[in-house]
Amino acid sequence: MLKEISLVNGKLTNSVSVYDRGLAYGDGFFETMLWGSNYKNGEKYFGVEFWLKHLKRIRKGCKFLKINIPSDFEILKQRDKILKESLNSGYASGLLKLIITRGVGGRGYKFVDGMKPTIIFLSFPRPQIDPQFYLSGVKACICENQLFYHEKLFGYKHLNRLDSVLARSEWDKKYFEGICADQKGNLIEGTMTNIFFVTKNTIITPPIINSGISGVMRDAILKNATKFFDKVVIKNVHRKHLHKFDQMFLTNSVIKIVPVNKIDNKKFIIKDNTRAFIDSFTRKSNERKSVNLEII
Image (tube, rainbow, N blue to C red; front, side, top):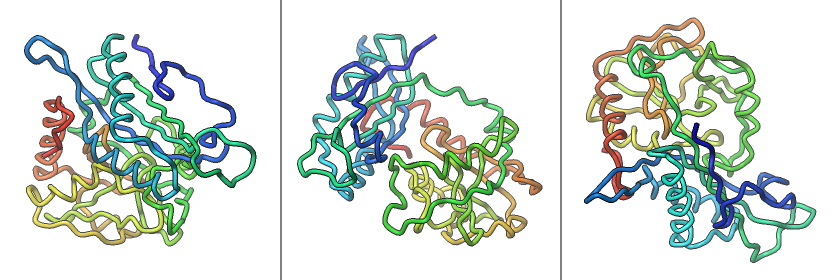
């Protein structure tokens, strides 16, 4: 069985300092993405899906919190080191997680300018997703725990994910995902996904304002949805209004698009437009091997 591989500041180790501010205060950001490999001219090479988009978002977060993130070249060098180690360990593809913290610091919230950040790469075997999920859909529930509200930190994949931890503790294997609402009862996102609803031939997705994360796949959906649907609308979806929608699906960089067949007592169907949309992403994800390629 393949093991997890970790790289900390360019070294193959699974240890960080107990004084790291990522551990003490959640002072940092993360991204999770898929990578794959293939052969070309007899040599094996690898690529990371949506690499530039993930790197751009983590850079944006670090700039906001004034974390001294290294150059793209340095991050790429460390990324390639762990992926080469993954290939040598028997991986053909997998899940790659990048964590950047402010680094090692003393006691207290105030940070010192010029701190050296901690760069962590984690490599995991590719998650196995039941193919039946894409055909028949999955069950979801609405969580009682609400998303944290913050007018400045929303949208960033920071290391303070306790709202998602609390929400995820509410269900077991009966459900694939839990859907979180804000304080007004508007559905915002899943614990690990963005959410989309369909009525007739229109996609509706909630705005990401003051809470939640606009995922890389959400952006790809918004960009490409009109190839399969008439239009896309961003507006609030209250939990009491689920009866207005025919279809629902979940997205993130790992699962791509997974339809929902039931949320609590509301049942959804899966129409041809959504099936075609799902196929376009899963097929291209399986075919994609180069770091420079972006999804449709």
